[in-house]
Image (cartoon, rainbow, N blue to C red; front, side, top):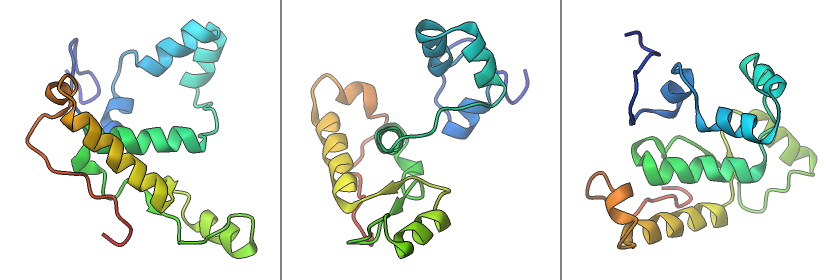
Length: 141
C-alpha cells in the first residue's frame, strides 16, 4: 500500500493527506450527483471553484471541530476595522492569501459552535475523540 492508498475504511488523517489519498471523496460524489462526468474530469485536472467566504468558514470550523490540533495555524485574523475595499485592505489581503481570513466575530462563532457540539449529548461521543476544553480562537491568543 502506498502513502496515498489507504485501503477501504474510515480514516482519521490531516486534510492535506486526505485530499492526496487515492479513492473517491465526498466532493467528487457531489460533483457526479449535481453536475456531469465532464465536471468531475475537470476537477481531476485541477479546475476548482473559487473558494467563497462561507467555504473558508466551513473549512476552519471543520478543523476546529474534528482536527483541533491543526486549527491554530489554519487561518488569519483580519485586523480590527480592516476594510478590503481600501488600498491598504487589498494589499493586506494579497499578502495573506495562503490561509482563510476570519474576523474576530467569525472566530467567536466557530468557538461557540464547537463548544455546543462538544456538549450536545448525541454529537459529543461522535466528535470528541479525546477530552478537550474549549477551542480558543480569540484574537491575539
